[in-house]
Amino acid sequence: MTTTHGRYHEVYARWKADPIGFWAEAARQIDWIKPAEKVFDPTSGPYGRWFTGALCNTCYNAVDRHVQGRGGQAAIIYDSPVTGTKRTISYAELQQEVATLAAVLQDMGVAKGDRVVLYMPMIPEAAIGMLACARIGAIHSVVFGGFAPKELATRIDDATPKVILSASCGVEGSRIIPYKPLLDEAITLSTAKPEACLIIQRPQGECSLVEGRDRDWKDEVAKAKASGRKAECVPVAATDPLYVLYTSGTTGKPKGVVRDNGGHMVALKWTMDHFFGVQPGEVFWAASDVGWVVGHSYIVYGPLLHGATAILYEGKPVGTPDAGAYWRVIAEHGVVTLFTAPTAFRAIKKEDPNAELLKGHDLSRFRALFLAGERADPDTVQWAERILKVPVIDHWWQTETGWPVAGNPMGLGLLPVKYGSPTVPMPGYVLEVVDEGGKPVPANTMGSIVIRLPLPPGCLPTLWHADERFRQSYLDPFPGTYNTSDAGYLDEDGYVWVMGRTDDIINVAGHRLSTGGMEEVLASHPAVAECAVIGIKDSLKGEVPCGFVVLKSGVTKKAADVEAELVALVREKIGPVAAFRLAVTVARLPKTRSGKILRGTMKKIADGDEWSMPATIDDPVILEEIGDVLRNRGVAS
Image (tube, rainbow, N blue to C red; front, side, top):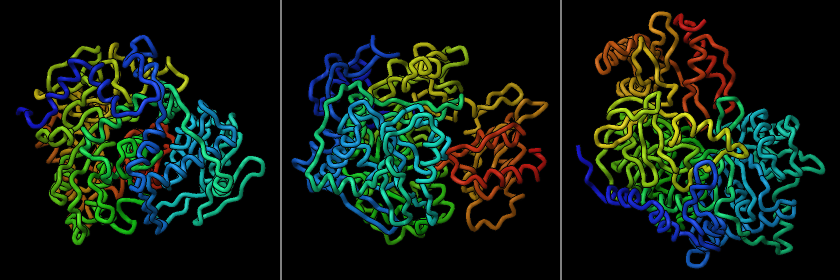
């Protein structure tokens, strides 16, 4: 097939012909205190740095510059079905709140270059805290609220924050999660001790404060407002860090992904228009959490840099109160674009397969759904297309890149859809698929997906205080490229197919097979709500696949019958080479709080290997359930 629709090919070719000129033009959308001396300096950092010599301030670009002209427009709409709270914050109000909190931080001794850890629920103060750090040149590091104390302590030790911003509790569904005891324990465990903590007391569960260390957020802000104290925007270098965001490391020590100020602003501003097709003044909703990269890029910074309205939602896709929660938010707030994880839509589809709860909601302003964070199976994409009657756009990127590597660009005119592919690379990215020796492989051949250096603006320039670790993890495996650690292939039209992490490729009797491809087949069965395939040890073949499936609500067919049909379906679609003989029905799959399925841990349980409880797990009980099911089937010991 050919891909001739829209302006994508023209824009991508223009970038490829003149990358410096392309990003220099994109940078004109940002207000600079001092323009860059060099758009790109290949001699700086592990692979080069963007916009060297420039001075800027991210908070000014996200907040202050919009006050003149759209000060009364909503910047953030906070919608919390779990607490029954809604709040709209205009750009003018946001400027006041951020400038005041920034002054409080300065009074607590925070200065340019200092680190501030945020351990927060999904409340407006989380975004205000991030922006307040950016305003005064402090480097924020957001840790997902409710993270285990040990994991929080490792991040405190690596970031060495001067101050921690937190809250008394988080609210997840009907559960109150006390954050303060977890924070206190983490500080006890950590070697690096913050000088102070600023704590917001939530009415759902107040906490005691440690004398001499903890301060009451609302009291400190009230005092600053009473005295009229506000912080001005502090100039920082474009190459100075805006934030450090930790992602899991293979050695157990988390990797601190650094995001700089200048390149980050340029890339995100470009994506809001050209990729997501959103205009200033429109309402954009990323249904994620500020603790994840999606929350950084597309709850807080992207929409605000663009002058759009961001939704900050404290709730789940189902159960707050039901599987119609997303439709209510879209209709009520006039959302034009929703970005969420495929898991959210699988959950909605499981609870309400015929989309009965969509009826009665006015989605006339809604024009696109974007899915990312994990593989979007074609069945879920097509279901969403049928019920929403708008484009459903799978796209692919990583914590490290900070913005989409590949996708179908709404703002440049959509390309033909190939279900299961996140479409094509965005300007800034040259994708290659290589074999184990780093040699490019032919089209439609599985291998490691790499990005040709240099990475574009907005991607990580390095890891926090760990240039050598950055090189070893990302640059050394395939010289001249960034190793994504994702596996897949490029087809004859240049579409990328991301089939899973490189460790999700299993070797069955010498055949390299994608678990993602098998999951695609399982998900196509009408009884299956969601699924996961792992490779488990086999004395004869090395590894064999095992498929875990969750059935849709209302399915009356016996689980054993469905499992037999699934085995036959994989044999038909992929062939006997897959050696797929084991489908296991489970009540639910173990996931992280961001919705990613914990396939690696499931594999360790199935193989009888030692495993530890993942810090990001949503409900630890599910792993016990998986172990019981496997033992009953004679798989795990």
